[in-house]
Image (cartoon, rainbow, N blue to C red; front, side, top):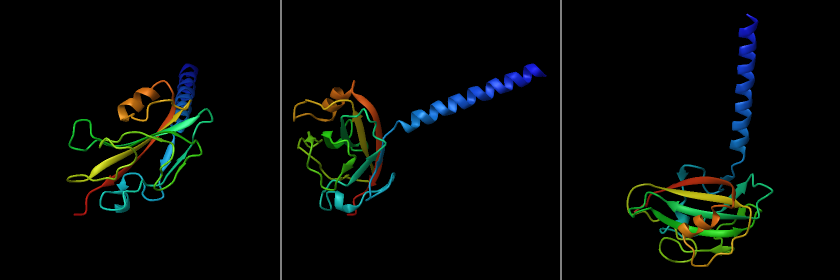
Length: 174
C-alpha cells in the first residue's frame, strides 16, 4: 500500500510540475488586442478597401523586458494567390505596446501589392482571416526599406523572444 501511495504522490507532483511549466510557456506569449474588434470577429469596414483603409489600433501586452523592439506582419492566408497576401510589414516598433489607428511610424516595408505601409482588407470573395502577428525582438533590425514579409521573417529568426497573434475576419459588403 505504501508503494502505491508513494507512486501516486510522485505522479501528482510530476503532473503539477508539468502544469506549472505549461502555464509558464503560455504566459510567455504576447497578448495582441484591438479596441476595434476582438479575436476571430469581423474587422470594421473602416479598415478595408471599402472604407478609409486605415490600419486598426492595436495594443500589445505581456512584452518581455528583454525586448528591444516589436515587429508586425498582417497576413491573409486565404487570399487566392500562392502563399496568401500580406497587408502590412512593420519593424522597429516601440516596446510601449501601442500602435494607434492609421499608424505611419517605425519602419514599414513592402506589402503584397509591392507598396509601403498598410493596405486594407479587400477579399475578392468570401470571408477571409487576417492574422495580426506581433513579434518581440531582442534587437532593433537594420534591414533594407524594401523588405517584404519573407525578408522580415528571415531577419527576425534569431531575435524573436516572444510573439502573439490577433485574428480578424472580413467579407466585402458589396
